[in-house]
Amino acid sequence: MSIFHNMFQAIQDMAFIWKEELKRSVHDEGVLMFLFLVPLAYPLLYSWVYNNEAVHEVPVVVVDQSHSALSREFIRQCDATPDVKVMFHADNLDEAKSLVSRQLVKGVYLIPHDFSTNLNRMQQTAVSVYCDMSLMLTYKAIYQTAVMVTQRLGAALRTKLAGNYTKHEDMVTAQPLAVEGVAMFNPSGGYGSCLLPAVLMLILQQTLVLGVGMSAGTAREANPNGLLIPYHPAYRGVGRVVLGKALCYLMIYAVMGAFLALVIPRLFSFPMFAHGSDLLLMMIPYILACIFFAMTVSCMVRYRENVMLLIVFVSVPLLFMSGVSWPKSNIPGLWQGVSWLFPSTFGIRSYVGVSSMGATIEQVLPEIKCLWIQAFAYFTTTCMVYGYQLRATRKWFK
Image (cartoon, rainbow, N blue to C red; front, side, top):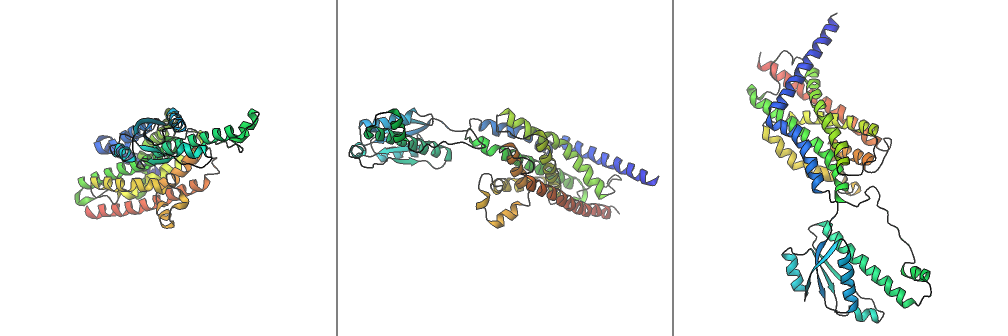
């Protein structure tokens, strides 16, 4: 009978802690913002900003020193593409550089004076491309447009000089080896479809750490001697405290995780190849790992503001170390080891695999196993640090 009584009492205590943590999360404006508003607003804002996927009509300036029919044809074809718009014609390179420095254009096409002469003499010529490298998307548009137009003009010249009799011969002369490019996993070639799925998972972890850490900082500021756990009969066991708080965060982030993983990609037409069951099997260990990771980190937070400084500092490095924006093979081994400490590393890789790349749950099983290991490891560390805090509270009030 006492066993059932103890179990019932434990459930009552966990329910009380869950209720108190939820009340604190709703009534604290800072925690409310990070646990509720930011996970809802940030994905919408980021996705809306990158919804165009790729840049078009990038302004360029042309320095045409040839003034020939072939140079004018090159300029016309560049301007006809959707990626580049010829905004200015400059007399020399210094004038073109001035336009770039004033940010009126993003690149320069320099056509040399012997452009047409060399071509008519059956000699190789060149077109110089100067790009503003501060934004890689504009560089890509300017450079690839120039390459495409030069290849097209070269093919037309070879066909004209070949003296063929049929269209088939012209086609073989222009393109003896047919190349068909297939964009895998990102059909639009867009920046948003490439990066946003990773950012969504990182937002989930970072907002959870911010919210839990700020809640812990508030508790320390309110309690005597900077204690994290209040003195109350319900806080009588470390398991009850940890599970009660974790259930509160799990309830909130089950909704936020579904919003980030399912609603946002469909709302903004990001690639989504995952089945609901696969996402569920991936998101459960990821959310649990993030919750216990956040609870472990929160025990190191002395003041509310500390956690904000910490998270702002590590957010960008975590995105790079996940292997999405920078190849995992090029990350030094030391930093790969550091990245394994954070749930976002394996959460991003598994989510991108099943959602954007169409991987099955078996193909991302190593990442899911790592997430479960992190969940159990951080649950253990959370119990250890909360046990220490609980003993400190009891000692203080004796």
